[in-house]
Length: 111
Length: 113
Image (cartoon, rainbow over all chains, first blue to last red; front, side):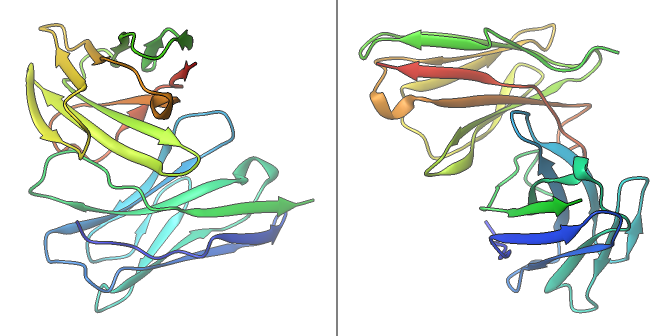
């Protein structure tokens, strides 16, 4: 299973943008880049996913490097409710639904 | 619509016992996956079921097993419990096998004493 590398923790100020990086230098052509987040005392929650092109949804944006060896999750305006552990996951499109979680980035948001 | 429901929410068992955890997926979802979360190992994939068949299995001993019923509900069983099995067990459901978005339940907190 391809691995991802994320910073252990990051801090942000409320209402400012947050850029959460992820390195995945061994990504293969069939790997999708997924992001999930886990708020305290809850199960993980889907945020966004992409393959090659940048993606936007109501929660966040995903910027994927041209060589696909890194990506960045962008929260446009952080709120206190965005404080969570964010997981960057590579999911092989040919391997069903399993998600291989790394250690993730713990994001704290200061008021 | 109702989310993923896991029962029970909390459980205390003694070493050597066995335990069965239940997961009811979102209505219409046919794929169910199970994960174990511990402070030391983080979130680890256990297994995935689709249409009552196990599709993927993680690197766990044979004491961990599961099944899926025709209504897509799933159970996982852990036999001969060890202290190290204490964890949060999470279930996730998806519309279909390999579907992009997985919806997680709140988990079952198992404590083995």
